[in-house]
Image (cartoon, rainbow, N blue to C red; front, side, top):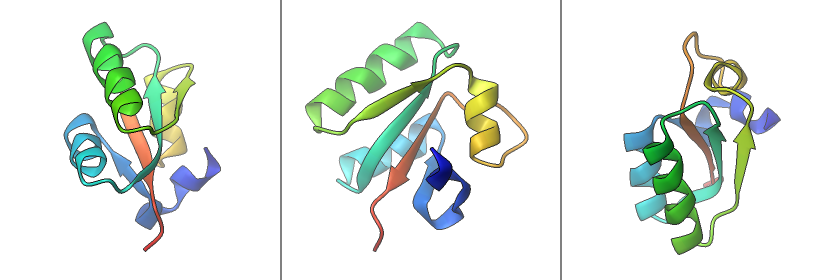
Length: 82
């Protein structure tokens, strides 16, 4: 999760993570466990479909802090180094 602090390696937010997943650029997904259930179900299924590991983080606030943003994040990911 420490790599989420590197701006060039992270993507934050459901729409952006979805685009990265569809583009095949994602190394690992992080999910805030207090996000809406439909978001969690959707991204768990997408991770399985794309063979991408995911890690569940205790809260959206904690995930946002790991990404160095001032708000909570439901979903974030690490993208492959280019």
